[in-house]
Every structure is written in C-alpha cells, then in structure tokens.
Image 1: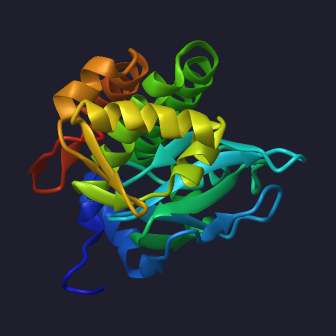
Image 2 (image 1 turned 30 degrees about the horizontal axis):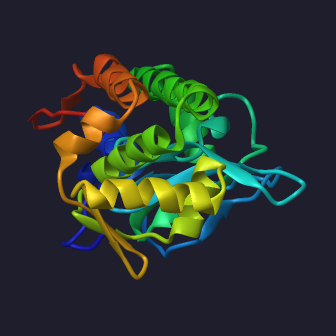
Image 3 (image 1 turned 180 degrees about the horizontal axis):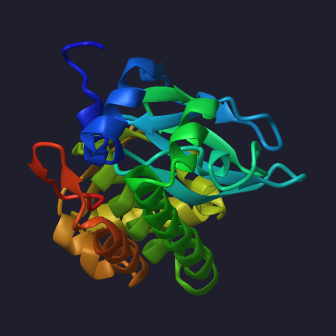
Length: 248
C-alpha cells in the first residue's frame, strides 16, 4: 500500500475492529479510479467491492432510451457493492466513477465471509446500507417534487462533501444525466447560482464559492441524507479513536 494512501481514508475501513481489519488488510488492493470508469454494468456479475478514499462513484440507472438518472453517490464514507452481502451478485444499476481518485478493492468472497461472521463488520455494513437506502429514497422524492435548481444545489453539496475539494471537473451534460433532466434546465439553474456568486462554472470546471448560500437554496433533501448518515454512524469508532463519519 502506498504511503500516500491508507485504508483509514475510507470511514468504513477505518471503523473496523482491529481483528477484523487485520483479516481483510492483506487483501485490500489500492486501485486507480479514472473518470468515467464503469465498475459495474447492469446485470453483470460483481467480482469486487470498492471502498473509495478519494474517488466518488455514481450509482445510476440507464433506461432503454439512453436516458439516465443517479440514485445515489458513494465517497469515502461508504462502499460500492452492497449487493454482494445483501444476497445478490448483480445489480440492475451501473456504478461509474464520477470524480477520479483511488479506492481499495476487495474480492467479493472475502467481503461475504467477513459479513457472514455476524460480527461488528456486519453491523457496520448494514447501518451504512440503511443510510444508502435513505439517500436513494430521498433522491427519488427530490427528483419528483423539487425544482431543478433545488436538485442541483442538493447534488452539488453532496458531491463536494465527498470530493473534499473546491473545484471538480464536471460538464453540464454530465450533471444533467445525473439529475435525469434536460441540459437546458441545468444551464439555466447553474447560471442563476453563478449570478448569485454561489458557484463558478467555466470550461467544464465547477467550483463552490459559498456553501451557505447553496444550503439555503437547496431543498430539505440534502439535510435529510446528511443527518441520517450521521445518525446511523456517528458513534462508530476509529481503531485509534472516535471519527466523524458524516459525508462532509
């Protein structure tokens, strides 16, 4: 493992008890996650789970027409591949790298073995899964009932929380695909946010200039997702002490 990277950068891995972490540690492989790389295809056999450290992964559905929408995002607060320990080896959704970075990859069978021990790892993964279900449900409600501007603010806040950066590479077309809306809607909404001095957008780069302003314009969905993750995992402990497992 590179000295520049550590499994502890992923909150779930950092929270594993020492004995359980020691069983998995030799099998955790650091992998590069380039932008746009597809980890899972719909219906494909899942061979690995991924614990992002600096990468952000989008879980989304692609319709027969080619239209798509994101159901959830995963950063260093979680794991990609919950189907592996929830009773299935495939998923109808896609998992694509939204923000390039790194992750630790673990063979499916090893994750299943550890989960089936019914120890603290199982409890931790199930609590994270509940938080992910909340995010998916809230995204569905948000996409149905809130304006494109509110959706964009919610999505930007969650994405930047995971990216831990002030600027990311992101085209308006990609954002439209994630939200499941027309590109023109994103262009209009992003223009309003830029005019208000909340974000900066140029040549495929988006930067957040004023978080508090975005939080004010976002719907309640952002706060609900963040609060639920914190509620479920706030008492999780790092092997060397208490850590915060909130998205941000």
